[in-house]
Image 1 (tube, one colour):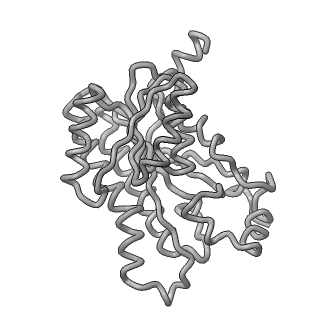
Image 2 (cartoon, one colour):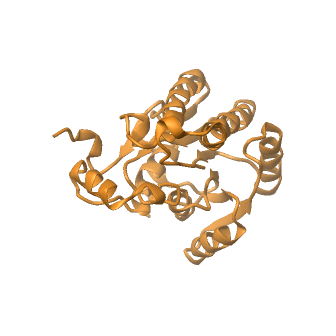
Length: 260
């Protein structure tokens, strides 16, 4: 990387915590952060998946470790942050990307499913923003929070009612926090993937559904996980992204631009 590009997008000496980093999409984002020089902490439930991603990162010359926590508990997230600060020396970037989905028809959604999806998609983001936001404020050196939203948080999407509601809430929370913390140089943005095959949506992607998506996507294909890396580096970097906060960074192959 040239000195100029490094000044814009380089993350040498930075520590990035990627919640959901053992998954397909956030794993690719974590890998991109590591290749740009950040020390990455993958937060997830599967050590096996984390080890595979860490191996790829280390093969490319990067650095990554695994952490786990009960993301539904503020105390557990705070304890995890303390461990990370002790082992890595601090945190500069937080990505909130854990997710759950379901295609249950609206009138059939049981309360326990509703509660589970809200806990994973919204409450975990809310609590992590509280814990890490407080840390960034006390640290006094700014920080970057990237919450993973969804096209369904911008445009109503059929069949995924609870998922869409949670993502809309994440979008709203992100803008509120961006406004609240901008004077402290804590930037809060939402990265908005279009349609990317991932673990939580594969059960929704029937042949009919795929046909509908392709008919509404000008690029006529799904996104690839690596195609989220550029937007991630922009939002994470203090060079190129220093004046970007409160934005919804859409990466969707033109889906949001399509009507008929």
